[in-house]
Length: 178
View: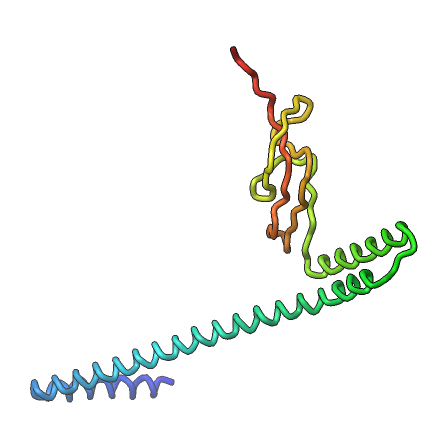
């Protein structure tokens, strides 16, 4: 390893000696050659980076398509079940409700397989990050900023909000001053 270091240092020193013995025109030509080599290296690095960027973009598009395909293929079972339920004839209301309940269980299992969590925040404190207040109601019996009703459930995907819950929030009764 030391011999390689010594030979590299000797090569550098001989190049320096050669440059010292060059005429000004030769030095200019040598510097121009170095500039051309540096420019060529810069162009290669820029081209490599552009190719890398394009490859990453293409890989990202393929990954997105693959994930969409996985989700849709999982959902196809739910669609098939709904189609079969629609074609079936139900003799009474009870059997219809059983069919709907079965579909609901299938959809819940599908959502769970994707780590999608449904949340119904009734009775919780209002938090704008997870809830969308549609209206407010005045109620002295309930703590202000408490969710009194859920119009539409919210959903989270691995802890991140997919859709905030649409809620009705309590507020203090306003005093009417005269």
